[in-house]
Image (cartoon, rainbow, N blue to C red; front, top):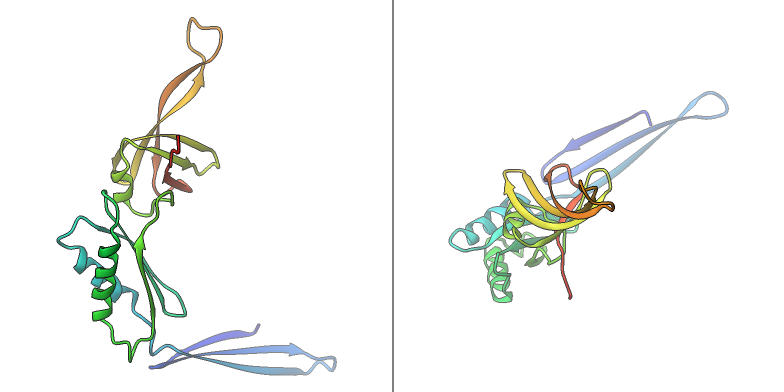
Length: 196
């Protein structure tokens, strides 16, 4: 590839790609490829996020994530310590749609909960699970289960059971150990569903 040049224009985004290849005679053949994408009707993720934040202002809900893909599929995930009600998802969906013009912005909208048993994405999810069983996949690839004991900023502590050599005992004993993690350094932490 010789170079890639991007040209932004409103409402059209154009990507111009030049490729130079040598032929057998030592001359150069140049290929020019134009790819044009219409972005005039792309949904603004920040505008969706502002709508959600406005809706949750006086409620017990918190925003987990807003995502918008290239096909204008908008996914909004909310959560609540007591659970997410379908009526509230419908209400939020209507609220978001009121702020967008379907004639101008063609989009698909999904509003739902973050999903039980899914990895935590925001600090509030950790806080809501204090005292509950969680599974942590540490940065080193070690998976462990335990009780989420505390959350302090981006740090959290999990109490796990480990076999350790105890003075006066011949065999290793199961003891509870506190492990501290950073939310930014673990591969994931999620609520552990117990079917017992």
